[in-house]
Structure formats: C-alpha cells, structure tokens
Length: 288
Image (cartoon, rainbow, N blue to C red; front, side, top):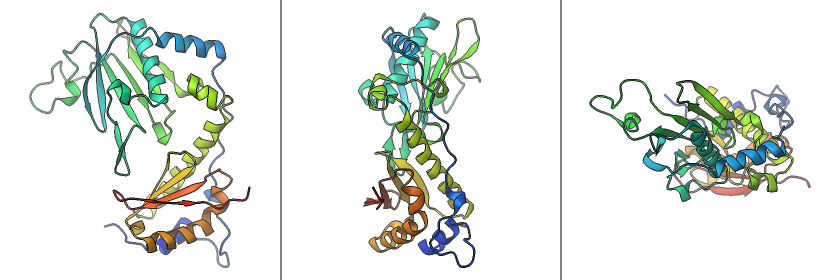
C-alpha cells in the first residue's frame, strides 16, 4: 500500500535524515556523480557517418504503438551496407527531433504526455516476419524467436542521446553498429554544442533526477523526477502537487533543501504538478 506522505514528510526523508541541529544545509550525498569529460567523434569520422546516412534505402512504417518497438520494413534484398546507412539516417533524424516528419508517432508517454524521449525502431527485410511483435493470438508468423534485421534504440537512462544500433548481417552474425560512447554529433548538435559541454551538463542534471527518483522509490512515495524540455527544467510529479497550496508548500521546502544542488547543475526552473494534470513552472533563484 502506497504511503500518503505529506510534502513536508517526504522532503524530510529526501534529505536523508539530516542529523540533529541541521536545518537548511543540503545533504552532501545528494550531489550527483561527476560526468566524465566528453570525448567527441573526430571530424573525419563524423562527416563519413553523416554521408552514409544520405545513401539509406527506402523504408515503410508498418506498425507502431506507444511503448512497443516501431516496425519499419525495407526490401527483402536490402544489403548490410544499406541497412547501415538507414540506421545512421534514423539516428540523425531521431537526435534532431524529426521522427514525426517520418510518420512515426510518439514512442512513449512521459508523465501522461506522449513523447519521443525513448523508443526503439526495429527494421525487417520484407513483411513476412514483421508483425511478430504485434501478434497477440495464433502462431507467430515466423516462429518463436525475433527475426528483425536491425534495430535502433535511444533514451537509455533518461538521456535522449544515449543510443545504440545493432544489425543482423546476411551472414547471420549479430553485430553492434554503434553506441553513444562513440561521441557522435549531428550537424545541428555540433553547431549548438561544439565541445559537448552542454550535453555533459545535461547528463549531470539527468543523473540528479535519477538519484531523486531512487530516494522517492525507497521511501514508497509517488514523487517522480525528470529533466524535460528545456533540459534545464526539472519536472516533479505527485498527487500531492495537484493544488496551488501543495505546490507552494513543496516548492519552499524543496528549494531550502536542494537549491545549493540545483543551481550548480544549471537548473533554471521547476515544473510541479500531478500526473495527467496541468503543471506550474517556477523559476529557481540562483545567483548569477
């Protein structure tokens, strides 16, 4: 049974039982682990990868449903090199926020709102086996195993750029094509964040939200945290934040406990509300 803690009670537990006499000092353990210095893909490799994407084969969006892999289909004779090009193309389109233009619907629901924050695109050569993940009755079209030819996944750990791709080659081998460890940037990302430091800072904020979620889960409360758009905004959801009174009370106490952590991470606002209800955005007062 879920504990219906008042905001003040939850915030006390969130502070991890600050010792007697401690009132406003933040808890050192709440500080997120530092993110390693970003290592970006070199310019030659990045240009080559982007060039591959332009050679992608034609594809069709066959099946899609929220929180289920979206199914794309290519011709049965599509080569490994063509699939590689398509995976790079999908990576770029996803990272640049262009999936809607490809006819792909929101892939998940974040705090009651459809979004593209995480998802998976599975690619099949031909349509014979392509419906297997959507088959709910009767025999599987191609047997019990999964017969996809390639896959692209993103949004691991709350980071939209944490992505990876795999391919099943015509020889039968299953290979990882790339992961986010390669430091790839799209042209748009390179223009806005040429050194990767902005994304590094965003990852630290995501880690902060992850840490707070772990604490809330441990305390059996319904408070949930996420970094949303813009990535300097922290979204906090709970049934206790459904009213102005609840939000105002929580805001005052949360900032007392966490402001010294939020400001160094460059958070600029808090968005508070109940799941599925309109939220209110509050600025975080930080010294310039």
